[in-house]
Length: 182
Figure 1 (cartoon, helix red, strand yellow):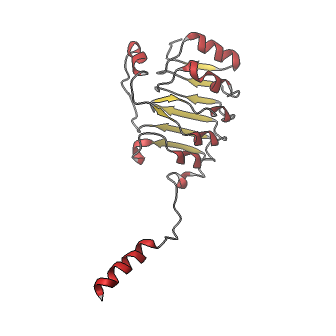
Figure 2 (cartoon, one colour):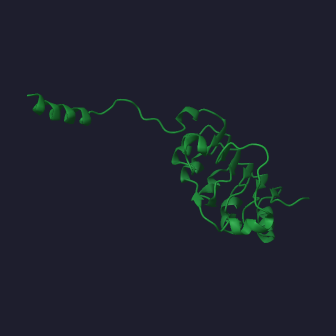
Figure 3 (cartoon, helix red, strand yellow):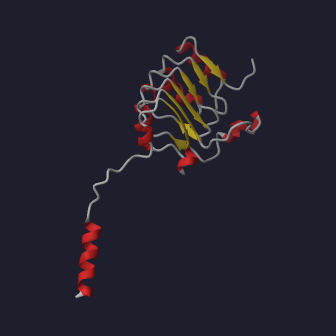
């Protein structure tokens, strides 16, 4: 009797549905307006689609880890080579749902490209793409759509002076930091 009852009970147990609501990775942060997210804290190596839950965010800082203080980066002569070496990552399209964002920092995430609808972030006035693997000429159209942008940090990405001038013409008053000492 026990031998035949056990498989039946096991099947019943496995087929039961839980009534618990599954929560997203950042659901507990959804009402915050200012956030710092360090991917290593969540055991991640890239930005997850759950980032789209942070719709109240006005200021968002995303980096690999929370290393503070001095960080050693490669010399300028090696930056070009760095942008060509894997890993390459992408932001999920869900980040473009965060239309309240005014300030966005995407630091050292190995980003090779921005989402095609990045221009939806119309409230951005400050954007830092520090130490990624972007080629600015390929991202110009997306960046030009950010008409409220006042500050853009692109150090550690591939950019030339023609791209920078074109961007400044498209967005009057834009300050671009590219690692140059003024």
